[in-house]
Amino acid sequence: MKNKSILIVGNGPSVLEHQLGEEINKFQTIGRINNYVTVDYDQYVGNKTSIWFNGGNQNLTIPKELAKKIIVFVPYEIINNNFNKIVKRTSYRLGLNQNEYILTKKEKMKHYEFISNVKRPTTGLNSILWALENYKEVIIHGFDFFQNSKEHYYDSYIYKKIINLKILKKGEKHDHLAEKLFVEQLIANKKIFQLSDYIKK
Image (cartoon, helix red, strand yellow):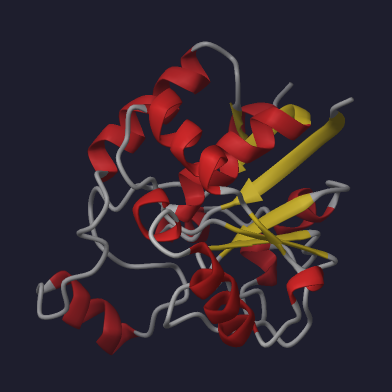
């Protein structure tokens, strides 16, 4: 049986356009992605976290206060090669025992690629697909798909400049345009909702 609703807060800079922190905190279940930051940004993104979605990445920053539920999405092409090695590596990177997080099965990762028609989906898209399977209502906020820049809302001024000048090649393993089109279709079909539209209801 599916749970009622979940809000997934992405890390796109568009979250800084509106101070929706109080609205965000009203949700019972809030998912956040990878290196999210709430300190000093709570007026924009709130401060509650129920689920931490991450990719078990090498550069992952572990939150000081862990969410009660941790879902890890390792790309199919990686997890399919050596599952046992990935389990050990993920536990090491998270600093957690295997029973303290959920490592999404390789069959499920392959399924997410299939239904989205996106090879190697981002953690953000995987979190949406996971939420659709587990919640009746899925609301998203801050999903910019790196269309105008490669930055996150919490990146420092200098880091933003470096990324946007393409000194650092970031996120090039993913097809951001394909993800954007797929998510826009989900919104058009009312499978998921943008927070800005949802709070007007």
